[in-house]
Image 1: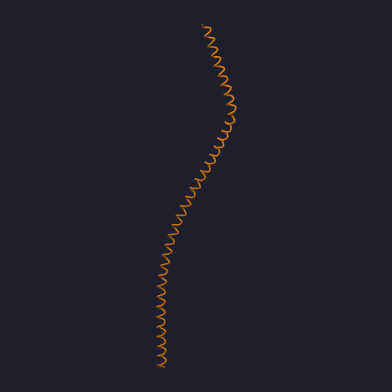
Image 2: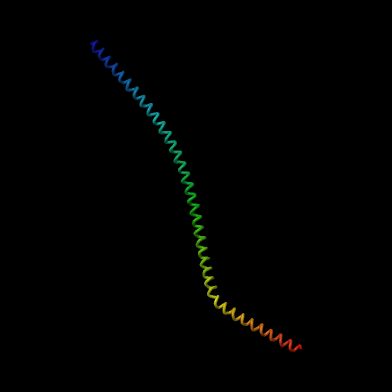
Length: 133
């Protein structure tokens, strides 16, 4: 019976030793996991900061996009107005070009009338001179 108790004690001591080794391994694994968790938390914090920075950049880009779209709309409105003005000027030019032959003809008539009046004035001046002498 003593022998059986000694064997049981030896077995129990072996079990305690095995359990102690398992606990050491478990504690070591726990420490490793705690380190990994801390590393993951740091990476998560860094990722959160990156996400916040990217969100701010996205907001700035969207704001710039909105401003560019507003400017584009203003430019398109200006281009439409400018096109309308160019069209009106082209119509005015065509009208003026159409008037050129009639105006040229009228100028010829006025030049002829002017020449006739000059001749009449010369004749009247001669007649006046003849009367006065």
